[in-house]
Image (cartoon, rainbow, N blue to C red; front, side, top):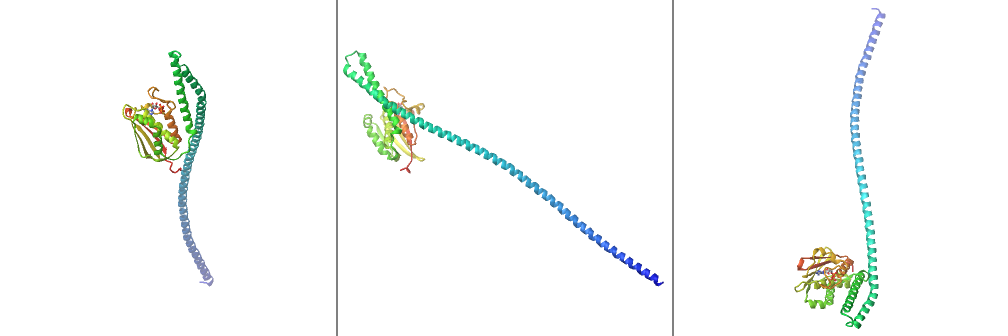
Length: 332
Ligand code: ADP
């Protein structure tokens, strides 16, 4: 072989080895590329699963927001309803207050009217009664029998009218002439009431007993009057048997519950409320004297003290009048 051809062969071998090297490099590059592609694909896969998780989380958040929205709506509706109720209650309270004020005003006016009417009626009545009495003194027996009868009726009528006027005045004075409420011995008040009723207690031989009575916060004069009216009725409306009266008291949920129990003629339950109204009576004056104002005064006194009054009756066995007085021991 010539040196020239030897050089050519060497050159060729050099080329082919370079080409083989390049091909090797290519193959290695291809492997790296395939690995990179795989890695990219993995990353893309991770991405897509991450995206899915994100979209689920987003959905859950949206659901929560929707729930919150509807909850908010419900709370707003409840608030609205509550607001309406509060406004309605406030309106009712205002209306009640106005009615109470109107009632107090009209009560005061009525009392004033009763006072003025009864007070002003006294004067002309005294004149009429005086004249008829003079007629009787000077002419009784000198005219005919019917004239005497007329004069007698006129005197009777004038006396009755005087009683009615006095009672009406007493009724209207329960508020206007009442004393301030102060600690008062109820036992002393009962003692005083019974002393005032001494004559009728003796006449009726009434047997009167009482529980030990407490100190109460009351208008002493009115407490005496209240007990006196009730005991005097128990004597007046007695039945055909020895009169037995008991005044009881018990302490019940912040108030004193007094009772005046008798064994008299009793009261039918249908009249239990009516008898506390002014001038309401269940009997004629011939059967039992009176004007029918005693219990109305009792009611007014008890209500002025913040209490209640009522009656129960077990038919012919008698009646029990109850009244309450709030316990105001802290007000002294
Ligand atoms: P008065 O005694 O002047 O009739 P009251 O107001 O005291 O007026 O009583 C009203 C009516 O209630 C009486 O007319 C009577 O019919 C009835 N009453 C009151 N107390 C008793 C009692 N203890 N027992 C039976 N009836 C009574």
